[in-house]
Length: 352
Ligand code: GDP
Image (cartoon, rainbow, N blue to C red; front, side, top):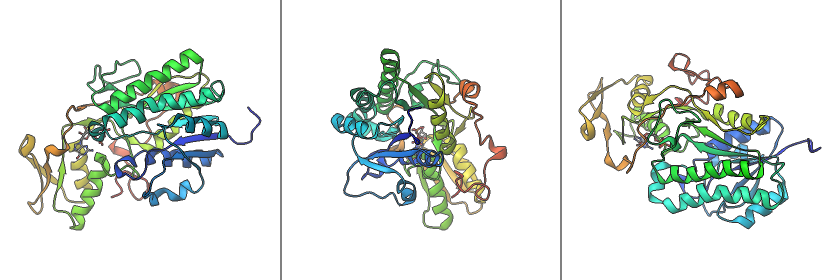
């Protein structure tokens, strides 16, 4: 208790002006909604840019105090910290797309790696290191070439992209600042989490949006990369609640958040077409594999090398036992049996 009625929070959101970098708006918008409901005063950092389109979530950010800032500008971060004196800081700022990180590795290292250090230093510079709690958006991508199945907090990391390598630095600098300066700083190792607000270049949103276009007759086929890739997919809305839970613990600690269920990209595509009453038949292998509309015989899914990554994370499966025991995580939305439908849950991933 510092005597203030409301707590101040920083939700850092990603760069604007480039569609590939709008992705952290998913978690930032759900977290802002969640915290506003809890009575927090919510502050955010946005980058200046000439063009950006956030129409989908403007209703949320209208209630957030926005500050112009950038994770590559240390003095700017320190002055924002001094002005707001946040009780909790959520570092969701990142270039968050794995494929993009191969094309912009240095920018990714700056924003996702050293950017985390700059933010921690900004908190220290203004003397808030003993009072401000810090959440770092760590990621299952750290496990990369997985060393153990399922992956838990103690599983060794093996990053497989410039994105994951940058996030590895961020992970360890958070641990180091916790140990060196006794900061309340934690890593949430979140497995993939999706929603209708997910950026359009991530596979779940790409598939659901493209299936809708195929059904509407505005697209003839969907081009995808590695169909064998397996992920542990959860809902972003559930996962942002766990970010907050981690900062309410007595002691700072790192947690895996996952569903402990795994599906392939092919499973996702099969399910989406099934849900719109257009079941698929798969034929062929490798680059020749294709998904055929059972009723019309048209090829609606094809593989394109363009979407392969130079090094791929083939399989991710998280073990959330620690989060279950200490944070009360239930892995909420559960397996296919109780999958939310568009009728019961307007935020369902499958609302296409
Ligand atoms: P990531 O797990 O953070 O890389 O999230 P993505 O949603 O971008 O990718 C999940 C998996 O889907 C990865 O293994 C991708 O290689 C695979 N994938 C297959 N086809 C595509 C595609 O067309 N786009 C994307 N983004 N991923 C694809």
